[in-house]
Figure (tube, rainbow, N blue to C red):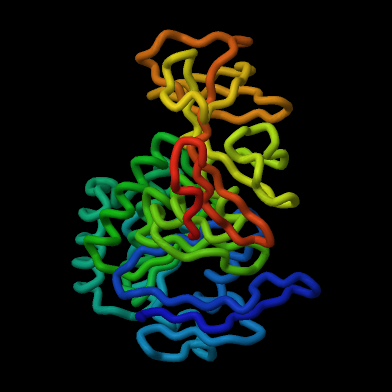
Length: 352
């Protein structure tokens, strides 16, 4: 592993920000630290950067222990969510700043900065100041400034947080392409699931100072290992009363389940095969989701959502429909299990 974090612990008073955190990152990979506010992801990033000191644990970069090495000597580039550009410096001067601090040759600085301005697509804007740039342009300058000294590792703290939605989506694609093109091992912090899925090669999900799961976006989405991951990633409804659903009445008491919209098939009478495995529900909400309708139905006292094709005749509020729940995630004591609808299939469960 190019970067290794071993048994990292950090407390702020009585608050445990990091609890025995361990993971590795392969060279050239782009890793997303994903979690809600207060989950500990930014603390991990800042400890790797040397901006915070761990109470215990070790950080290795390219096989070298860096715990006692100052931030400026760790070979790390850092991109902040608020850009942190120098307002009194031009685009050129901002990008050149780290190279000037290192007292690089002026000819090399000019060549390197010119190369990076071309790379980030801001040729012709070299003499502009941050106040004359858009949010997306500022973030590109911040990125170029961070990679100008050719760091071993690039860290990005909520890099798209201060940018509007349309530009954010464009910048995500650009950033991923740039990082892979340059081959820089990178870690970025985000609380946005869509952002993590679009950008990261691998995702580390944090919660309450601990790591819940590590894996690709597909692995985490399809095979959540904890109840937190199952509820945090993707849309979901938590089910407490299994008696509402005929196919799942025999599930253990005290357990809870999660149903995602893609697990639910909704239709009028005769539209769904295996009607013996279906329940009857009443439509309580219909919302347009671009490629389909998201339909909320009430079965007994429980509401769940499913998708409905735009190609079919429109459904109506209050209409009674047939509902087939294909599967659900059952969790008990934080163990997650996939349960299939046993009235339509002989496969009743598959352990994650």
